Length: 112
Image (tube, rainbow, N blue to C red; front, side, top):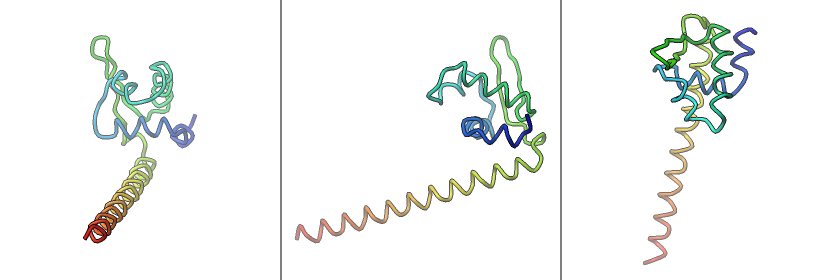
């Protein structure tokens, strides 16, 4: 399966995002999802088979990290996509904060 098809699946993109800057064990990754460990393990296998993650085994634990170099231009695309989403989230948070401040000011004015 080619890399673009692999990351087209939202849960796999979420896994990549988690391990983009840090190495996590399969268990630590699975804890962050509302699916079984087996389902996360299957997604990790697909990511590994596509060459998008590196695997380091230490005893019985398996540690995963996104392999940005192997992704080539796809890594840049994913970083841009995530940055855009974070920018949009920050904008929503700022709007909510401004709206809350305006509501507080309005309540204070009515209370006078």
